Length: 159
Ligand SMILES: Cc1cc2nc3c(=O)[nH]c(=O)nc-3n(C[C@H](O)[C@H](O)[C@H](O)COP(=O)(O)O)c2cc1C
Image (tube, rainbow, N blue to C red; front, top):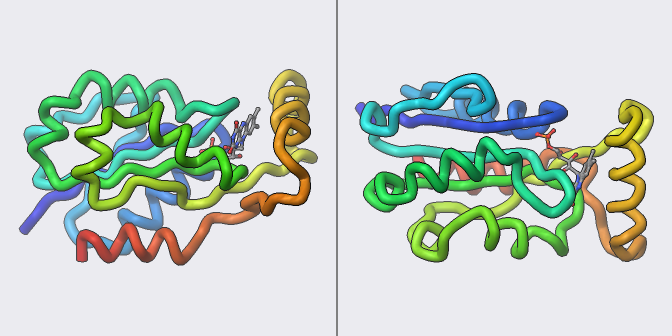
């Protein structure tokens, strides 16, 4: 049976939660936190790689893992996700996260929604989050939860 790696890097838990939901929905998955380990791609038949967004970029460990394995990733069925809050920034973030060859070959490359609880943020994170929020048009919708439909779309690619 196919073994699927679900690798993620998360600052406030949203990308981790998304990865856990994907892992729970598919058979034969292995979860890997890219901030604490570097999984070996040769052990897997398919891969899902994701990360939370801060100030216009995906988590640096997600980006680092993709960059370090881009040749190997070209040979595997792969899906890539971000968790973030501002829908209009998704294309730009994904564009920076993925070389175009990986993006074009991806089973999924997009956002799974996200959340940002201003009350729970402290210090610099809170200040930056406020600046980022102000920088986007307040009329535009902002994600406040994981996007269950997008999660199902990604999961269905491996079912
Ligand atoms: C300091 C800070 C900066 C953020 N910057 C962005 C951003 O530039 N674009 C965006 O869409 N979301 C931004 N967000 C929202 C996060 O991407 C969202 O909270 C996401 O769910 C985080 O994923 P994580 O919990 O896995 O870290 C920011 C959140 C914080 C706290």
